[in-house]
Image 1: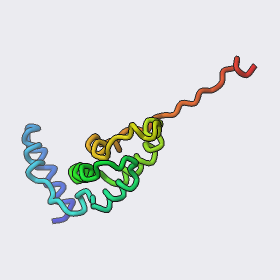
Image 2 (image 1 turned 90 degrees about the horizontal axis):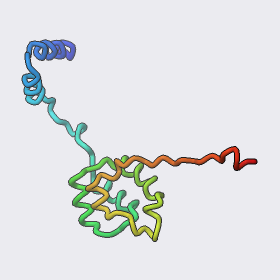
Image 3 (image 1 turned 60 degrees about the vertical axis):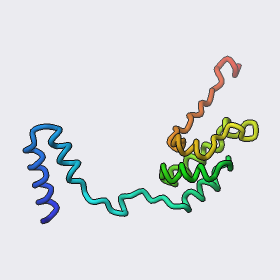
Image 4 (image 1 turned 60 degrees about the horizontal axis):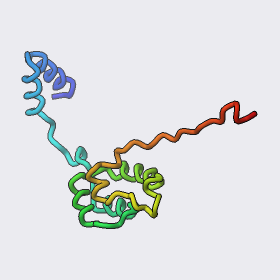
Amino acid sequence: MKFDEWYEQQKEMIQAMTTRKDVAFYVWNNKPAKTSASKKTNTSEDFDLFWEMYPNKSAKATALIAWNKAKPAIIDVVHALDWQTKQENWTKEGGKYIPMGSTYINQARWTDEKPIVIVHKKSLGDLI
C-alpha cells in the first residue's frame, strides 16, 4: 500500500469516528513502531562532557543517576551552560551559589531562559 492510499484510509476512518474519545483511542492504539532513530540518544560520553563543563564538581554519582533518568539532549545542556556559567549568581563568592549537578539536572535548568541585558541610555540632561 502506498503512503497516499494509507493516509486517505486513515483520514476516512478518523472522519467516521464520532467522538474525541474514539479518535484518542484510535491514535493511542495505532501508534507507529518506535525505531532507534526516534529515541533520544544519550550516552555516558554525553554525561562526561556535561561533567567536564559543569563547574560544581561535587556528588558526581548522584548527578549521573539524575542524568540517566532525565536523558537531556547534550547540545541543549552545552548551549545553556555556555551562558549560565557566566552569570553573576554563578560567579560571585567563588561559585558558592552554583547548584549541585544533580539539582541542575533534576530541575532541567538547561531549559532556563537566558536573561535579557538592559542597557540604560544616558538621558539628555546627562549630556548637557
